[in-house]
Picture 1 (cartoon, one colour):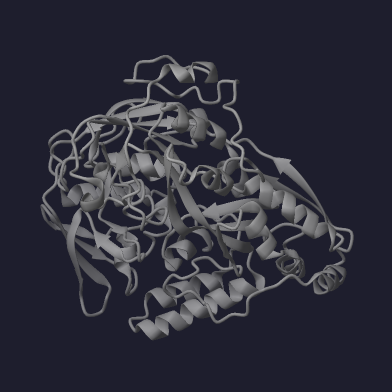
Picture 2 (spheres, rainbow, N blue to C red; picture 1 turned 45 degrees about the vertical axis):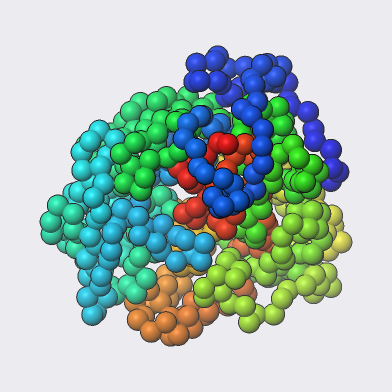
Length: 532
């Protein structure tokens, strides 16, 4: 989308998840106007009571997210999409989570302490209860981690938990766990905060029919691909939410999320396009929240199959990309250029590497060396994420100048993320915030469960384990630097930019944190939001 207009709501039922009070039947776009606006007022205060007034209790907030279709689940260990993560955060807790600086902050873990060798960590739990009244115990923690590590499963956090010897780890009290590690791990708190490492009750088995967590909201109902209704947990250890109820509704089309927000069918719309935000910013109808440079934007090359199993082709594609044009066109300038590495501005980021620029002559030379002068490749994309289709179109035109034919293939919004993990050769990709070491463990190790580039090198794995085990921070940074230099030279992620994460809210909404990159603790923190 390259203009400032807002497309109409689709009339084909793609926003059929909207409901009021959890009992309205699924409707098409024609019935959206039947729902009423919750109120009016000012917002954009970032959660500052001084600016937004005294927090008020009550009301239902309806939050629209892109979803995953009928295959959606409330199993927090299977969370992969942002909608999954937001629902999991509302229902469950982790031992730790990442603050805006990407440092681990205590959550269910009250504190942690290593031994001198950094291969045993004592974790003390805070007093907290599950929704059924049972206390959260050390046995629940061990059960949760062992479930995630099940070799028969492909849970997202499995690679992050790899350093933990779960057979040797044990409960040392009702609220204390001794984690025994396979090797010294200096940044073990990042393991506790890993994406998807939620704590569930030891007896939990049916997450979609009756999920029991320790989070700020309790389960009411769930219709996969449509909505999930949750109610305030008055006994939440971190203070009861202000909202009475929270409803997640699925709207895969950005235009549907925007129009539902404008029409009062929802109060929170996740992930807006930059052009949409610019069109509505400051017009008094809705408020725009920008989470600066939150999302890595990339093209993902499968390094284990032609043509990208030849490093010369990957290097040629690095040189085909005009990153500034991609940021300007696909993100409407709402972001920064990337340099083929994740985590710009984060701890350990290799910011000393030269900024890549387009070099079509050298790209053609490398392709000729690889015997790929007349290369034709399919680029998978989808309207599942802001800027994806625009980026694919721009890159297709850039590649043509290097003699490469890029065929853009549109994928299903419901299944795109699962389809591209193993299918295709080149795809549009993005990521929210996480520490660089977590990005490596979850996406770039041989056994990583979301290894979209199929980057599998045992010597790289060994270097990662060495970095984990290095107690001196400067020495550890040097090892992460070596790993990133290799990825910069021959990896499969063509990281062309870092986008602002844009959220739209009704003017009644207060408490939305502005310093909260996507995936961090205060992102989608609905227990701290209220309605004026």
